[in-house]
Length: 331
Ligand SMILES: Cc1cc2nc3c(=O)[nH]c(=O)nc-3n(C[C@H](O)[C@H](O)[C@H](O)COP(=O)(O)O)c2cc1C
Image 1: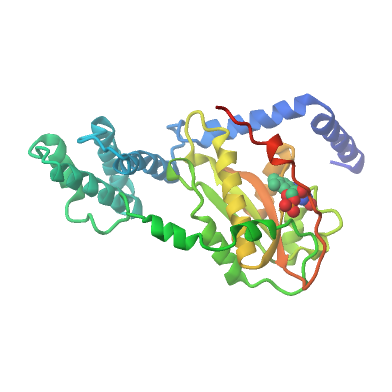
Image 2: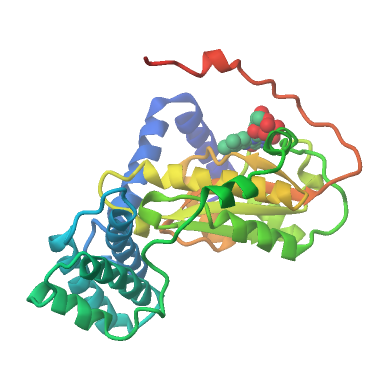
């Protein structure tokens, strides 16, 4: 397209997405189109990731059941029969990997729980569980674990208030290079964020090469005045393939929670961060993903600008609303 053509195109584009509600509608339509194409409601495009997510969702139901105050004997029969059937299908297609071993480990605890409660195991249901587990119950990580109040009290015996209140969005980083191992550690810690049915759909795309950082920031509209200071960018994504019906919003909730954990983990590593919005027309999201190596089935949740801390620097106060404006008592 020639220059004039481009100018006209950009004008129409800017008008559509920033001046009309129709742009909002188009963005929502993109939300749904990606969801219908990749989520595991769509049996046609069911990827390995979708199958892992679906199996995780289903075996997590068993884990949760085992962690209740009063677990029912033989609970979840139909769900467990389906879980074993799906796990076998998965195994036939992809072989034995972590997910299969985790399911075995979880079902082994379920089996032992029923055994301990003197449930008759001499029937087709329990035989199918036992044969599925075979002798591999200890190779995976599934089921429940014991935590003590004391452990939690010991772990939380630090000044959380100061920790939380010393994190700020930083827009003035040190010029020194980032220590990648510290960032890896922060991302590693962020993996402990809760997620819907433990599906952990997250992606963390890390860019530290200056050229790449600038390429990513090209699509972001909130870094005016501190672009040069930014030493790295993490683009937080969630994989739509790991979601199912009624979860179009969950994609952003899980991604948002992951991003917050990451910012706290970066803070813990003394790496400065600034969350960056990705409020962009869907056309830009498509372009960004293509340009910086993010898969089409990932949704871009937000970016996090990172850099080392200067000895002293200014941050915006960002005063908080009063608690009474947020907390509503319902007695
Ligand atoms: C999702 C999200 C997007 C944000 N986008 C931007 C941005 O584009 N540019 C920016 O300078 N700050 C951005 N911020 C930072 C907010 O301005 C900041 O979090 C808020 O004022 C609270 O301040 P604090 O983070 O220092 O506590 C964003 C924050 C969030 C959570």
